[in-house]
Image (cartoon, rainbow over all chains, first blue to last red; front, side):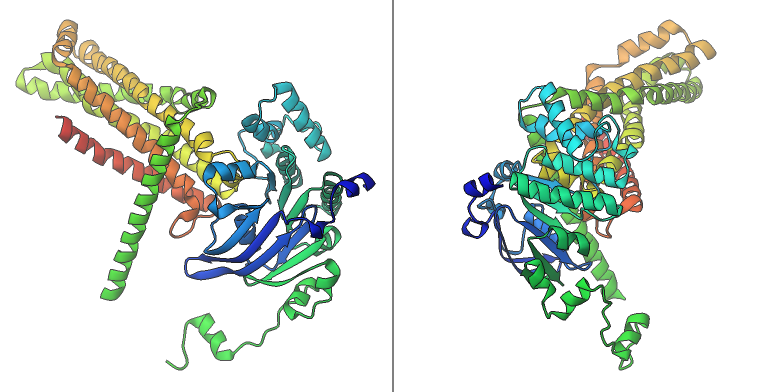
Length: 278
Length: 263
């Protein structure tokens, strides 16, 4: 670590690897994200949290360049991704890894073939080297010996870990991880959290995690961003966000249901479509 | 009431135009990618095995029975005019120009087209296509180009097989069952069938192949943009059914157009 600290500057002094400014996006006429501002320095773990429908998955799709914003800019490793053509975007994407919620492995390929795919597509390495590299990543995910199995033969947690192995095969500078702990048993979830911390500490990787698992978020996050109905509710360190007086954020962190006052007329109209004043 | 109807009509028309535009751009993208190197033959051969080789048994059975029933019907009709010697010509022309291309297309739509649509649709709904994008692997080149090339190679070959087996089916009924002269059966065929007929059948099979793979793969690829949403197993099965129906109707409609132009 001492050697790494000597090489890597303090995070706040370096250019951010991810920078989002004034991001607005719509789905049809509905505004999904509104005025999102984010900046992630190298080597940081940023956790994006929020309730269902808060826009966190949409934000992730924007960060990956899978969706174009209505307004605003997203800079990844210094490049504005909306202004890149397909070739430039693909070149940039070789430096990022994405682990999808369900693994997103290809059903027609074995686990090893799935993990090897990016190396086969983007490098001229020989078969033997590729196979060894894939086994190393699978070993890292405690999946040694499962390389010849088809994805349909794996459990949910194993699929997720195999997906992570594939995301890491190109040694990316940025790792995006969608819901790492969802649906996992507590032991595997903790193992995965430890692994995420190790990737940051040992490899200096910048990691963006989208989750709604509080325990996991508080354990791994350097900073947490909370989204509320498409807007940024708060961004800060774990202590800062836990101390916020934002009621919605406190409800989320303390698992409190929203007890908003309901107008009886509106409630009746929602249930029956009947308008008392009509 | 009228306003609602006009609204719905306008909504459907806009949706149709939007989808037509999206599908046209999709076709151009796939074809332009296919024409740019590098082309990997291994995935294409794998798809030819799935779309072509594994359809041969169905094509043989369908072709044989079609040839038999065609000979039966023509025999009955030609008997009334005393022209049974034309049986071979009638069977061959109907097979080459019309039945083989259309029926082969319908068999391929049912067997491979539905599989293409559902496979791509499931990949879309399970984020596998997004995963390809994020790995900087072009889904068009990796997924779609092999399916397009394989269908364009397989369907004309399957059509040729259908024609050959159909003629054998016709020969079996005409010559073996109804004692039509074997020489007359084949001589008539030899004298009547001209290059133009073969070109017409081949052109149709190529056009149908393109329509099949275009419609079925585009429906699966744009599953997430379906007007009423498409999610999970229900969404994939609904879109697959739509794709099969759309591809079948388009093939039948285009068959008439091509016949009208080439006859």
